[in-house]
Length: 628
Image 1 (tube, helix red, strand yellow):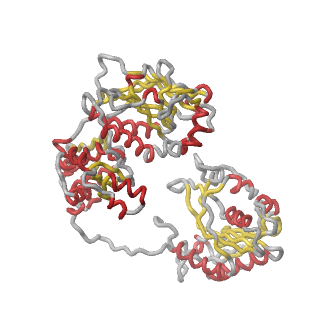
Image 2 (image 1 turned 135 degrees about the horizontal axis):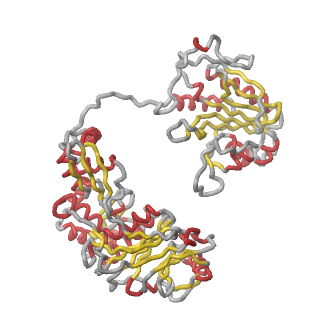
Image 3 (image 1 turned 30 degrees about the vertical axis):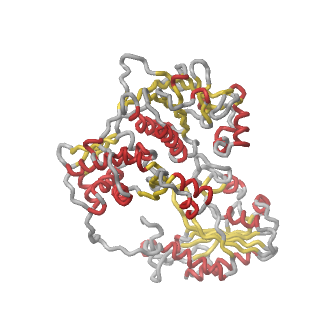
């Protein structure tokens, strides 16, 4: 969770009250945050340099500013600065006096500033939103807090600027209207912040890669793009090149009174959230407190929208559901009053059975009724919820499928096999091409935005991981015997999530001879350990008619019959059967597969589903999943 450092005296001034450390810690605990540490600027600097608390203590001075380090929940983006922390705690303590309404400036007498998004930006960062804070009054503390909030948002919600990047500018140095474009690197030239000379865009990225530890991490975001995003004013003056750096031309100073905020993104929803947080936190210093001037943004399709959107979101939550989840018997009006302490507006419906909730733009963490219920519990006080004995008794236990997996791991080790643990994500080529299996699009779960080509799909077989491990171990003496017990992921239209996990056992044996016999013997070893008898007629189905078979009991045998899987060598492979259906396969891996994985010696492999064999000593089938 983010840790926010604020000056104690400035925070107490914003809270309108002086607290002892213990009193403030109690207030934080009641609100659901934590006072992580009490330090000073000099101590903090000494710890970073000296590295020991003892040396830091020696460097402390009485006149040094005391700092509070406050641990903030990861989704409370409105509390990433002193202004947000003070506002939240003030509303918590005095909801009627400290509640805030966020508004847009009245633009009926003048036209809003205009920003046009060019279609070429779709190639790199397609979205942009903007706003203006008029008549803002900065001092050193406010200015530092404004910059720190942007940094915290960049590291948190913006995901290291990969999703969202923020630019803030002195509007007095710019000439509207503005444009957001994507240009070739050689067409962009400007003086970046903290530099004294002009750089061409591609030269600037090289400069940061080699010389700037802070900014080099953002260079790869656009480095390989054919065009770079750039924000320009009416004079074609570069304002910023997101997500890397702003221009020195429009740099904000303590004398800045009008601030233009631009937010570029690959995710429009997060861009609007970031803009709302910035505007609501620092509009309190504007000429009209808590009022933001909107900007007209014309997107690449010509659609015009005013940003920011500070309208509250609304939802209705049942009073009975709130009390049932928390374990209380609070009346509806008390629930509505509790929500006011969390900056939410609550009003009872006409029948009194539900609360209609209005969520302000600062609380973008409130997405669902459960978030409202959590806020009611915090406002009511967890210590005020009476402990009660649950109406049902449950005992924790290991899932049968996991217990079976552990038992089989022991059996495999005793059979001379070494356990491996491989990635659940593989490339398409490893999952299909190298195994000589077709990719029909109906088997594997595909990642929409994979980080690398090695992690494109969820594995549908444990075999690629085992073969890759063999390839990396080819310098070791033969035979090599490896196994893995793990899940594969298969598309399933009947599953709630559209896919399901399936537990499997995979074993491979790499040797110069007798590999098929070794794998056949291993199958018999496993089935003996599972207590499943063998039938040699190839059917492996229980005796008796279909009506005589009990669906909740395992009544089958196991057997095998010849198969024709392209991954294995023809005539040296067999499908494993149980209760009349295939549950696995074993055989000699096809030479083309071994070559594709760069394995020089013959390989035999076995892959077996484990879920059909999860039953107790009375052969009653057991649940293999938590919700089953």
